[in-house]
Image (cartoon, rainbow over all chains, first blue to last red; front, side, top):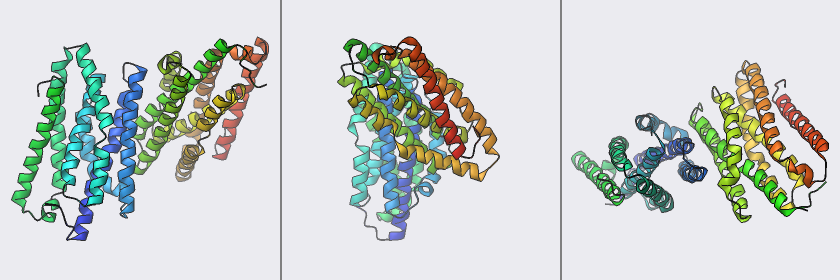
Length: 223
Length: 223
């Protein structure tokens, strides 16, 4: 089911949207994470979260450079996704350090799963870029360990963070659905009809939710 | 007047304070700048300010690595400077994008002048690190061009930004004085008595103010 860009103009606008959504997602994650870092309990934790934020920015730069390579304006590509990404962040303002950590972890993992799934349908060189960006295991591992340590320190956190993670997942899925809808011509690209395309989107939703639930269980939280 | 670390323990605590102040300054500048970036008028400007914030973080990492090399704990070295740096930021909250730009520019240039001046008295390898970090001309040039463009676009900005820059300078000088006071043993290190040391601090203040005034004039602002 790999995509052959049979319609180059259409494929190009698909790529523009895909990369535009990723780029704006990374840029805004950078800004939110680095602001949240200020509320870290220790300077060490601030630096750890800062480093993760910086990694997001470097991802933004990679995607943005790819857009320029394709002769596309990065700003124009990102703009359509600004309202919904900003809306996501407005609806998920962390109340404290632990909620910031969980938010970073959920964004990191769910968007990696999402973009990796979508990248199955793109050309090799774009897929490579997506893989490179979305499999930054180091950042994910750091966040997981910080969450684990926090939960060990204070078991009462578990129910609050489980609830918070569920809300984050809900918002992230809505967000993923919006981006997918923006990429509807993907259906056309890979030669499936609208119904099949909707089925794919439902399948993707289930896949993202399952991955999340698995990770929460590993943290000892009930999804 | 170069320092020979005749008293190693004292010199070590001098270095710890110098690097600790720099490290916390860079870390907090990173967080503030990247939060401010969100208010940029265009996505392009957001990315530009984000890049500068990331550079600050990379500087923080360099200084922090040097502290570790010296067998010193970066967090412990930064902590004494946290209250006054945070206080500085609280007293200089930008009201909009233009004030954020000016704040970044003033912090960038005045602290570079300050640390370069102080580094005249340190060992070669530390001086090299300070030079490397504080002469990041690229970021400074970007900020200067953004300010110049903003002032060209709207000449009424000039008086407001001139006033704002004056306030920033005042706060930055207070900050520099605090750090210098924390480094009082510098006097002892370079073999001058307390009176001479106070004279040096006055001289440094004048030097920083003159550099700032020169830069403001180049922007067409009256210092």
